[in-house]
Image (cartoon, rainbow, N blue to C red; front, side, top):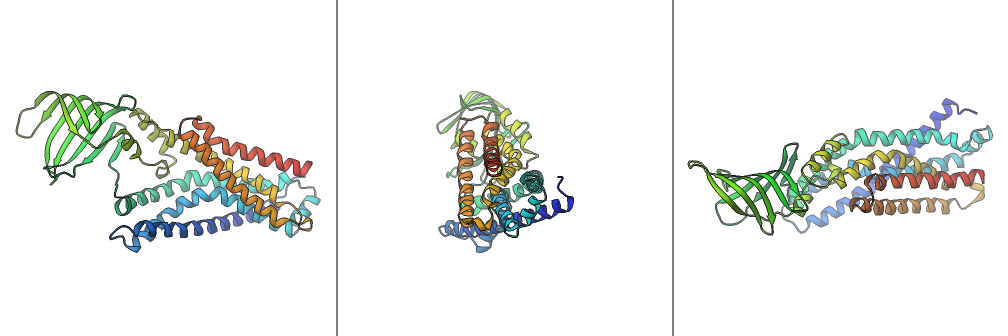
Length: 368
């Protein structure tokens, strides 16, 4: 029997409303926890207004919603299925010849559409606000604003000098960095005093990052009012390390789904690993399928008839399965970020495993 369109819409509407309600509840709880944590962090700082804390909490809400959507799908699907089972609406549908796979089709359509929307439309919006969050956090809480920028032409670094000398900052450009040998190719250094006035420019064929020093080779030194000076090498004091540079890259969560592929290409062209960004991009692609798998898991714990009892126990078991999913996903993603697992395998494994386990349990429940 084909599922009637009216029934399809009715079930889909129930699932969508339940998922949105669950997402709203999870986001509210997470935001309250976030505000408490921000207040704790701000307590040790001076001049951090309450308005800044509230702004930070609000800026993170879209990111939290994006992260919590799979768990909202699990909770919301359980809510919708439990309600439809308690009111015997699914019992009537099944007695009319509608199989479990047919009345789960509207739910799968809803969550797949929601997953695609979150990745392609909502994710860029959340990324913009999260980037703003990190800028404000760096200014008021961590004291470490971003000092790095990457473009298709190469890498730009900013080194601020806090000593008592006249030099205020160095702007360092390099076309490419080798992480294995800590070597820079085609390096240009612009030096400014504390009043932001240009002092000198250094052009080097290559450089090597050593502890506390950026060693420049075959240097042309240009100072305003003087002829260029050729030097075999030049020692530039620096606090930069490759780890510091790598950590200064924009986090993948602050980047739009549409811009990630080009940024990954630029990052790898500059000689840096793009594992985190590639993993995040693949996880966005896999997210709709992960949410579809959670619908199967929710159905396993929600289709028991009320008269058979133990509904509360099954609901608790479903929530515990959500926590297990969270820990499993974190472990697999950590292996992917470390390079132990291929990126595509680490990103897609949770979705595949959850879908297979949920479908297998549902087949066993329905067909014995």
